[in-house]
Image (cartoon, rainbow, N blue to C red; front, top):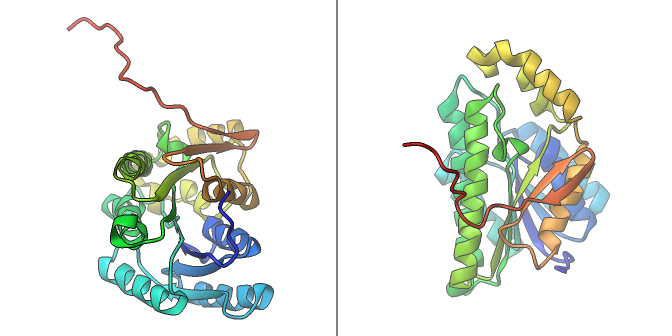
Length: 267
């Protein structure tokens, strides 16, 4: 098991919701945490709050829009200058916006790619790195479609596929970096309000009742429950390319087919 004492973690989308919960559980287990978020006010307030609770200078906030390559790179260099290393990287920043779908792709998928590649460049052994672990936050919508949010669904399927492919690359090329994905069901965070917002759901607002029925079937998780899943994916050295599905009634590692199923069809 990976010990977190003295390790340095980076969490994107850290100012609220899941990101805040992830940062907190990492701090509670001895890590130092760099908080990245586009919301500067909330991020700075959280930095103050965490440093008071967990010890001075354990946390530092960096304002970053994950859809900006330059901002991400600049922040990463500042983190290395301050903390000297990065051992854990959690790509958590994400939005639901079916109307501005290119923005959703840029944040939810391209942002994960940017963060992962930055972390890998620093961590992988062939570059003289010390190894480490990357956790990418997908969703149950990355395993099965969510009708009201086809673009969000596409980005989360992308995160799962990207994570699994890169984890395999890491294993084959001996990067020394584990890369895992989290797929929680609905979580009680501000993001959940998006499903009732015409501004974010657009043409799919008519499917709101269908989403509500799904929410009854899959009751919302609390942030604290999902944070325990993150800790498992970070600490368990045996997990690489793992995809942790989390629902209110429990969590489990997803089994993917080893080969393409050949169901006969008439062509």
